[in-house]
Image (tube, rainbow, N blue to C red; front, side, top):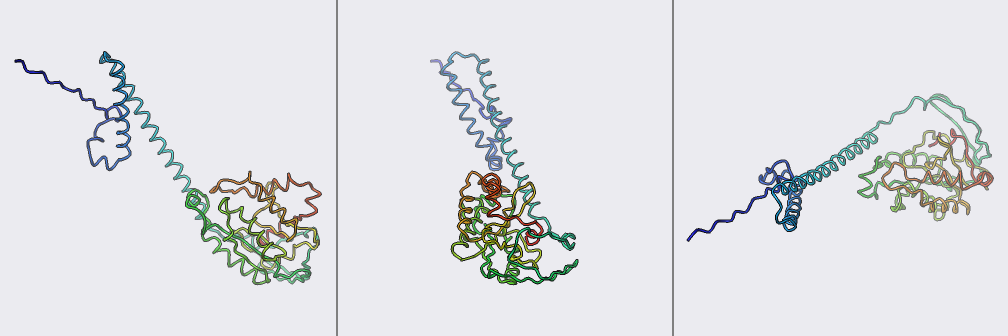
Length: 344
């Protein structure tokens, strides 16, 4: 009785269709070193087997040349998929390293005193009557002595405030932001505290009022509003956490308007906009409405982590486009920068 012929199953080296060699599938040590490529190979094997089985069912009499053509097509598809994955991770690594390098350079800059700080300058008048009356002032390259008589306001009713997000920022925010504000307030707080103690102003750290639904810079609006409503402050002076007092001989009363109808003090910055990093506001119904309107400009809120938060853009749009000149002049004063910037 003739022996039955053994049926030999043709071995299909599927891995060879996906990678340039089969060593990745056969070497256990290589699997551990490159687990990602191993998983891609497994997925590719399943895809190739499914395609080939479907091809056999649909073309039972397909010639060997047809099968070779099908294998070539599958091989090209698998190779393209791998290239796309590799390109994605390479691009991600380049972007990540560039971001971290730029952030490192930004946060490791050394701050030095500029020689221009010792150059005396003559500042023009504010352009409006103030409650501070300067009686004597002598300036030299190294010292400045002055005396001021203030009337009409108790220094204890002038509040200075700032905040940071160093204690409440999310992990994502810390990862993607360009600048690192951790410990910033700890560096600038003694400077602000010494200035306020010298003249009797009240200083508040409003970091606890931080609104995490927006970038931290927007929380200045809520912080100032709380002081107006709850702390009985007649004037609130907002200062960004990265600002310091450069001329402690100048008092806030020196540029507070004597006219009770003036509610907001701003300074002009480059580009024709207004500086949202340092400003004063009076406790009045107009001021509360102003803060509410500024906060409601949600279309200007930027995603967290960017170098800008959008609050300055909102302020500029509100002042330049939302007010006519008559209304602006009735409630807002803009002293020369040397008055305001010499403090901030």
